[in-house]
Amino acid sequence: MGGISGLAAKTSYLRFLVYSLLEYMERTNLDIRIIAFNVKRLDFLGLHRIPDKEDVDVCIDDWGKRRGINQEVLDMYKKMYSHLFDAIHNYRNNIMYFTYRDDPYKNNEEFMLNPQIYEYGLLDLGVDGLVAGLFEEEDEASILQINLLAKVYSVAKEKGWSFNDLKILLELLQVECATKTPPPRRDIIQGCQNIKQQVSAHRQTVAALIRRLDGFITRAKHILSLDKPSSSPIRAESFIKGINIVQLYGLSEIEKRVILTSVINEVLKDAEEKQRQGIDRAYIIIVDELNKYAPRTRTPIKASLIEIAARGRDLRVSLFGAEQFPSDIDGQVLGNTGTLVIGRSSPTELEDRSYRIFGELKAVAERLGKGEVLVYHPIHLQPLILMFPPPLNDVMRECGRY
Image (cartoon, rainbow, N blue to C red; front, side, top):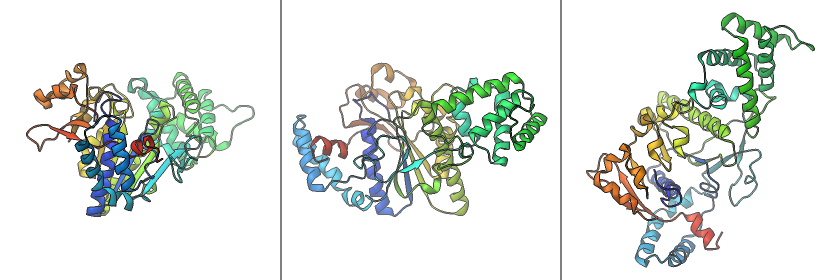
């Protein structure tokens, strides 16, 4: 889903799709777990506040009249929601929030209800999570550093160490495992010697890894537990049938990358396990600003997103992405897209070869209004123009009912 920020209503469209999925779940009784990463302030917060149908009708009329929208269009919006209301109300208790300990929204029931607080120890992250936190670009990660990190993590996992223990180990490794004053624990000395025997750990490589670890710990203070090997991470079994909101707003870019990587890897692992067990479960992952996490440039965090794009249909894992510039997304992700949706877009963006599937109709995207999108799907001979209603929460808040 792409388009100009503030005009294309990308996230609004995704929110309407979420409600539509609830209706689909109600009708089919399928086990679908929707996971939406809340990147911007209020986009996916407050979804547990389900208004009455009568209030929605009044507020849509009020919202539309102040914008000069034709009554026929407003009546169509109301009918769109009327088909979803039974499902929305039946699933009002099937909305789970996950957030970090310092989130200013976590105690405000207007935005979240009974959120689960997540926090990650060293052993909760795995090597992929550490790589996502320590390296922003794939080119920054030398083979020596990755090999050393993998071995260090393997020892830490075997010994049950925390981030603080890992820091001591690396500092000891930097001085060739010589004892210090006061001397470190015997298990750390033994671990240091074990690593020296198995991998090449030059002082410069170790020093670089220490600097990266220090930077990661400093910039990921909202999500890390430094003194516990394991804390309270988001696990696949934490997700419920229905809507699961993972709060990322307010976190640093490093923290967002780490949580996104860890959660997606959990989903992929669970999806493979459920497939082996013959359990019919589907995941839908919603990522706003997808171009940040799966860019054309080489980054160590986009491998999981590429795997979803390539193998998602087989694993019953779907990826919904929203971004201002789809042309910035990695070709392996964009090329495996089943449905491409664009809202109002700039002529410069539309010149990219990514939009050639829209043919001459892509010129329409320059003039689309709010609530209008251009949709391409392989089963249709031509792209379609669709309309969708405004977000319930925004309408109710503007109407003074929230």
